[in-house]
Image (tube, rainbow, N blue to C red; front, top):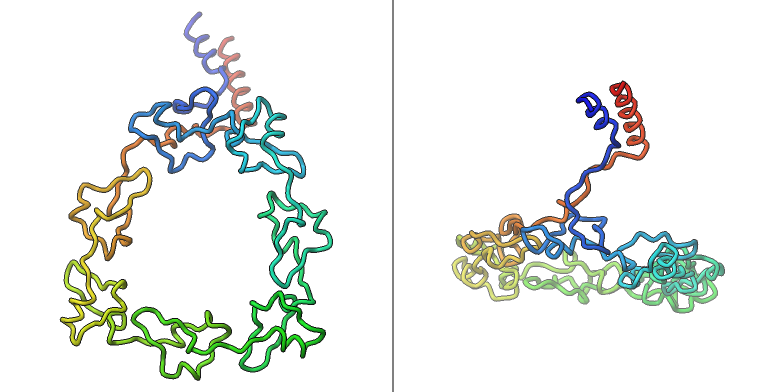
Length: 330
């Protein structure tokens, strides 16, 4: 066979898809999402890179298209999936819940169509908007315009609302809290006007900005310029700040954490400079970008298949190459 014919044969061969070596052992397959997954060593092997793979014998290791009215149940992820698609449909799929499984909020009730309405998967997927409607016999099923100094109380949503607006105002409304009910942050105190200041509804609605002010006798009530290598510690906000700037520096400041206190994410390790690198304040301020680096382990993404040409494109390319090959053969 001459060189011309060899070239023609090579050109006419179907276009393939090349990928890196699959680390999965028999009965396993690469996970659909490989981003941020790593092996347990720098050397790629089936043992070290098992985290890159799904067990094909289990429900979670397969793509299952469930029948109408059923869903792929994540609670069955570890169950044996069966030998074929039909078996997996039986093993891995579950009947969708209906709106009879919905939990409607106080002041709501299930729609009359509940039994006939499918949710998207399990009972937790039964949404209020799909399954529930206002119960107009209850406070929560009505919009009530309360009198001055009162608010429609969500805690009374399940209470019978009465026959008319006047009855609902009595049944469903509550006196607004005042700033005496506020809970001020450490280092803050209630304003002297607290008793006379209405919040927007219950005690939880009493905002810091409306009800509270700085307590300048405490660390949290002052802005302290700490010495180099120290930070104003919010954990000391309730401590007495002292009589002057020097006393406040002593009372309110703490040594900055170093990167030795960092918690690096999976696949990362602390930099060798960790002990000498200051964070901005406490251990929680030790950022990944400052304190951590790649741990050098092999990445699952390295096993991802190369970009796949669409079926139609591959067929067209194969036909073209085949035609060229035949022409060269002649």
